Length: 125
Image (cartoon, rainbow, N blue to C red; front, side):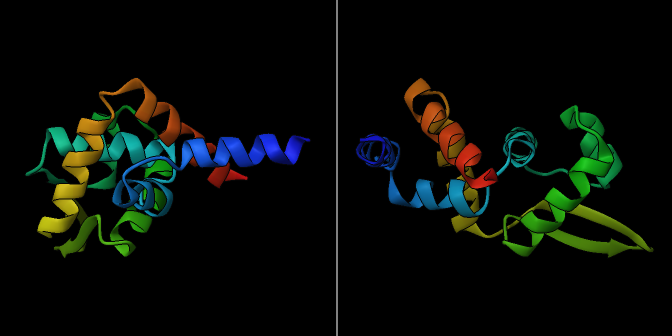
C-alpha cells in the first residue's frame, strides 16, 4: 500500500515544467545551490571568489566551494583563474540564464517550492 502512496506522491511532485524539473534534479540539487542561484539571479554580473560569494550568500566557504565547483561543471557557473585566484560567475549561456530566471520566478509559487524541496531532499538520499 505504501508503494501506491509513493507512486502518487512521485507523480504529483513530478508535475512541473520538464525543463525546471530537470534543472532542479540535475543542477540545483541542494539548498546551498538554491541559495547560490538566488544570489546570482539578484546579482547577475557578480564575479568573485568562493569566500566572498559565501559571505554574501550567508553560507560557509567550505560548504560553498564544492557546490560552486559542481555548478561550474554542470554549466550553471563559469570558473576562471585570475592571477592564481579562482573567480566564479553566472554562466553567460542564454539558455542557462533563462532557466535561472524561470526557476527563481517559479519559486514565488508555494506549490512549486514544495515540489523543488521534495526533489532536493529525495536527491540527498
